Image 1 (cartoon, rainbow over the protein chains, first blue to last red):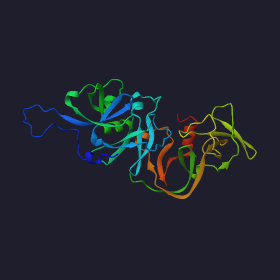
Image 2 (image 1 turned 90 degrees about the horizontal axis):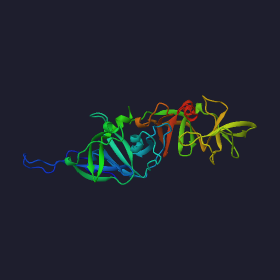
Image 3 (image 1 turned 45 degrees about the vertical axis):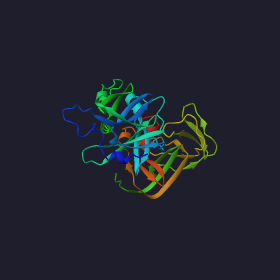
Image 4 (image 1 turned 120 degrees about the vertical axis):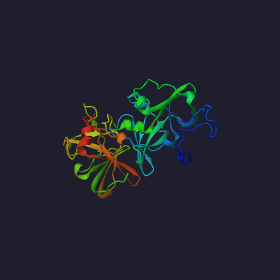
Length: 176
Length: 146
């Protein structure tokens, strides 16, 4: 399942309606893709960074790769790394490794003008598209030291705290 | 990703889902065994008689770790140069690629580690081969890579 069409537009800064009077407070709304990275735990990604949801891709494990890397999966003409976000955030391999049933392929630019780079993360369930408003903003969770490094913001959604992961920062963090 | 091309002789070593690609000169000749090697007192080490010689054998997982039970179908042995010359490794398949032209790509940075034995990968006729060298495979598989 590819999302090329909606990826053509950056939807991270959507405002409610064009043409409203300037003195009326505008409730900003933005679209986000919601991904279950562990049972009952969610993160969100800006839609323009999400390329496709792939079902059950063939995964080739890479000996010696960091514990949070599941392996390589095919994408376009090459292979991209598949990450288990839960293992990364816990800083420990999961006793119940994420199945590679659903995989979200992400794209980012390492620097302005640089070519797109790709990676993927495991999803425990189907990825959902949701809308988020400014009034849902909240503090980052404290269950992992990594959140401030990889998340740009956080919001509450249906009683859950959902960090918004910055894809470029996530993969930059792994290259340090 | 614009891969450079390399040309030469290589050996494909398969252990389960893992397909390693090593330079030909770093891999000893393939030897075929009959029967299942016997376990030894050392976990992950087996032994078997090959051409009248008692051979110490290791069978690796697809994560390049020694298996405690000898897997069925591992009937091809090779030695790897750069390590214990008496130790043989059991593989599901050993394939020599003669004068192969390959386009290796670097491993994505997220998958790299200092101890990891894999440098890159090659896609060849629908297979994904992981590029490595015998000394690094030996160091990692025999524990020095932990």
